[in-house]
Length: 96
Image 1 (cartoon, one colour):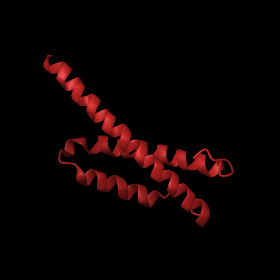
Image 2 (cartoon, one colour):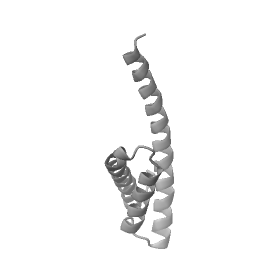
Image 3 (tube, one colour):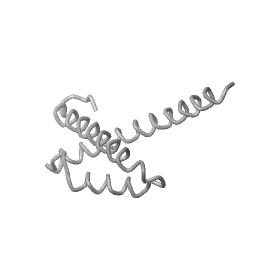
């Protein structure tokens, strides 16, 4: 097996881990939606999102990736918000 194939296998393994973590994160987002619904808390918390982005940037070892982790975090939080909105709008059905 060539180096290219080895690297692809490594990417595939990382992707599997990311999918598992994504699913876990979305499950927690659903629980947060339930809390927000019960406590009349808005889905969007801009200050919290800024803090999350900054914290994620601070975890980087390679700060040439700051922009990328910022964009990644924004997209991930957008998906979480969409999932929360979906759960809030379907509160009477058990889709979340």
